[in-house]
Length: 118
Image (cartoon, rainbow, N blue to C red; front, side):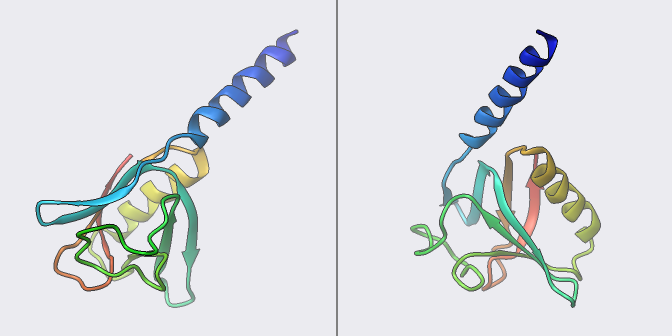
């Protein structure tokens, strides 16, 4: 009985996290995505991290100032001063299924992550 209860609890958390999806958008001078789930973290040999959110970025949302990398990804720049903290937050959210809000740097032409909230 205890195993059945644990299974039901795990499935309910999985279902709840699968519906945590919101659109990307533009407000003021800021592009953002979330709160939503991270679909994919793609790490290159050079250390750049590309993040694919659950909301489609093709075509870019109305008013977006930046261009998604390859029409799909947000860039986490390995040279950013807060790279380790951002990567840890994104990796943690991906592994636990937590929704995040990603705010993008308005000074970059490519959609580059400025900060996240989990």
